[in-house]
Length: 247
Image (cartoon, rainbow, N blue to C red; front, side, top):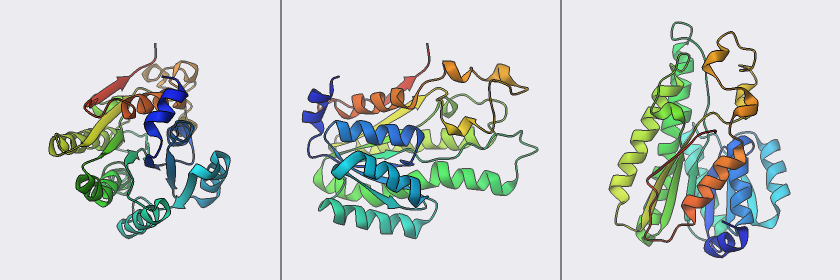
């Protein structure tokens, strides 16, 4: 879909993207701004967040927020509505963490932190933003999942359970919003070449047969294009789930 068509369809849209300071979140934010939407960028670290916001021009702004803090999410939601002068019409739940370790090496704190960032945080944003969408009978909530939301791999003892949970959260959301004018889409990509792989170094990891080479992985822009495709379908069309893999 070209940006001219997408821009006409997203003109006037007010989008929130979590984890927007880098990687997939940044790519999604750039795609939505290019398509005509206003975009609120959410991330914990203010410096890179503001850098991305400045690079996107006057249709984007950053709001530092710790997605693991319920009070901070509610504060951010109120500020977003104030800045937009209206409730958001799009939510892209993307923020998350990727702890990689065998089960016996994972700490309880690491596991709990993954649950909070990957599962509870998306619920916080859904809970904060869904009521206004339901009242308006219009909106779209996108969950960025993973191949790990339906397939468990060694070393994913924290990541896979949280992504399976996020998938279930999406399916409940889809069931509860069907026919209300609010749409819900799960975008589940395979491995994406982002900074989260730096610590693992999949090309040289001792278990490298578990991973594709980084050169084979999807790029953040591939996921962004998929999100844009879902968002720009006619209002009567809901893409419940899109799985994306590398060729």
